[in-house]
Image (cartoon, rainbow, N blue to C red):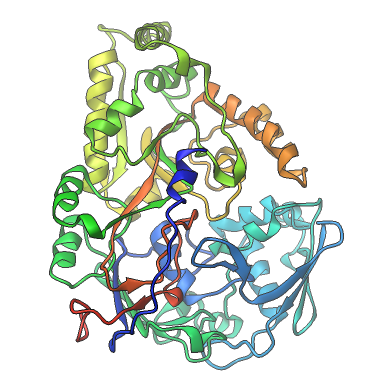
Length: 535
């Protein structure tokens, strides 16, 4: 059993405690959302908020299992033709009825090249009929393989069978949007005064670089079981967030905690520091289309000399799992591929790395030099400093660190305006394809420019398989190719460390997807629970 599933052994549950009078939750989101339009963004800070504001066909329960959202049932005789029966009586936040045509409009908008949606690639992964021709401008969006067979029946046509479709349907890119609001307000439809959504919450207020405030949606289909009345997502840095947490102004922190603060919080707040598995990886990606990283020998050398266990010890991150591939052990039941060099001695790895760099033309007279871009955060800075020192000590590499604010970082990586950059990626569905597909040559997530027909072939073959036992060997072959080409240097599979106030209920430690919805949370009646609104 891998570390990923070991963490899940802690069974989450809560005694039935009396609820606090004030049900107002404050969460630090770390960064401002780039956009709240699900067709305009890729980032994690945006997704956290959008899952409160909008609801797709399927969602995750508090334990990370796929359960009905807007769709009550899904049926397919062949995994290629799918019918979804929607909830009767479901409404948008303005009182309009939700029907199948809303999803038809939303997915056509996602597919439309004019939208330039980063997550249109989802429709390619799902093999929705005609998506390739639509994205290429050869067919109109109206020909997408989705149609309404009535107000409450949605039909999907795929170009080939897909066994894990329901897992894909929880992705934020597939959330529905309100057509009339978009047609009236255009790009301004996500403003609080214009917002219309179908999730458990509505957008109340946004203050740039400060906060996003949501309030309960009285028209939400499950509003009677929603407890938290208001949730505030703050956009403040880690140090400020922990200081405010300690004064009671914040109830939950985000998932990145730096080394110095881990030491402090473990000592002072041991009972409130909780671990949650993350289905992802953290490391560095390289722009393989420009020097020096268009040379695979350079990428291989840098990868070989990094001792993951030593890095984790140095940063006091022993809760994390060292990563030598993109897929954490146990995700979706897969035992991941392990590269041959894991069995080598440290001396053999170092000698091989030095020989690779020398063959690529680098040495004492011509040291390897490059820039390393990372989003501003103390944890990211500490990791970059340590890795830079290791490369300098072992290979004489000169690395220039380039910290940038979140939105600037996103822009630079999406445009491949970098040499090496920090990469922290997790999947929203519990299949290894969610991580391996990052490097598929046509994927919008592929920011490295990596393009290997063999790797693409194994992934495409895996998508053809309906059963896990058929897909797993193909995933292993794809992982082996990726390990040889090294467009990404994975360092560890993160475990989310959150500070959680003891009065916050409903948060499951055994959720393998590290995703929670505010509608599943609540504040219990305890002495430290907030008694008045916080700003």
